[in-house]
Length: 189
Image (tube, helix red, strand yellow):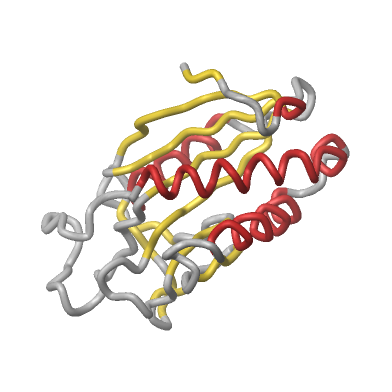
């Protein structure tokens, strides 16, 4: 599933970068950029088995309650991701697909690391009994189980992006891409 989700994201991201270069270089807000990315993600999802999932910006609810998760220090933190793809509770077997956090390169390292920690927590298994209460019938108290977390950093001055993929509570891949090279092969490192 992660490879499918990465392919969907990569296709949408290439179209997003080609379409929004001027907005990126004009330094529009993350919220504005996420709204644009959402359009391209929806276009890609519509042709997949995930077409019934929802893409939301700044979504902060979990079955009517504030979304929370547990960070690495076992502290409850409120979740409000920049962009998520989820079923809004309609699919009990796989409610959460993608959580994306977007940052500008000039933001503080602390803020960037907080987003990375959040993605680690969100991509932990729903069956982690030490942290989450999940019986296979009801949703866990804390949000988790996202199949893919994406940390997305935009460096408008260097005209590039950094993408980090997270799953199972850890980062497993990252790459940089020049914005001008959207649609071309990327370099992993």
